[in-house]
Amino acid sequence: MCPQCRAFITTKDRVCPYCGEKVGPRAIDLRNSGQTLMGFIPSARFVTVMILLVDFALFVGTLLGGEGLFQAGAERGFEVFRLHQWYRLITAGFLHGGWLHILMNAWVLYDLGAQVEEIYGPPRLIVFFSASNFFGYLLSAYLKSPMSASVGSSAGIFGLIGAMIALGVRTRTSMGQSIRALYIRWAIYGLLFGLLPGIDNTAHLGGLAAGFAIAYVAGTPRVTGSNAELFWRALAALCVLVTVYSFYQLYLHIPANRL
Image (cartoon, rainbow, N blue to C red; front, side, top):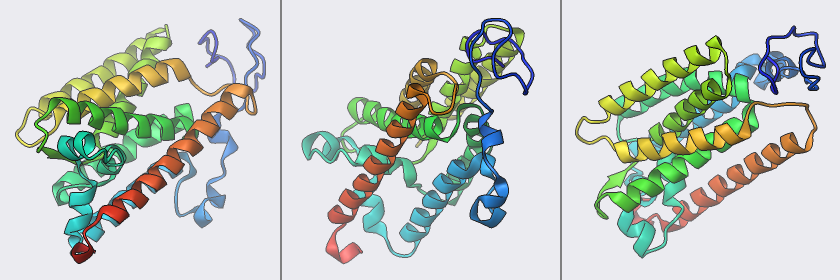
């Protein structure tokens, strides 16, 4: 599909025959699954699997007596706004409150993340997920009780749903309508499920809005090596650095007797 006029073209076209836009190779064609950790991780969802590995590693850490890890990394309005522990808006998106919580999120993220990663490419996926977690938990911390804690990757997951809705909105074809309708249903089902006690729908709404807005502006990858693609690569690298720094701050705030 041409990234400019959204017309269907062949995989061999390097210039759109309808609008003249230069077209680079598909993101999935640029990756070789056999070169990704000796083929153990499918290249089409490499970033998705990396996020899941971090999630499960941290979850195992909380099970092995790391209660301080959970307490120091959860989003809670009091610590965020009164103590200025902004790192919690990042770390909360990688922590989970139980086996059911992490398995449900992992199940959705494994499929949804692969779709977003294939269409938008790894840099945009990183930006979508990171920004959706941040803005989702920022909205949650602002609107909820200051002593109410939240964790989970669902804010980022809703951001990815928002990104797919944005793809459907930008693609002004019958296929775009189908994509938009499908993921709007995903969002509705998720928000209805979020009405159950103990689920932070505020973070879901914030993540959904952030993912949609950023993806609508970002669009899909164009010519490899262009200024736009270099920008999204740099922004993704910044998101990774901010995430690493946030976990360093989390480590510093874990009580000494809870390490």
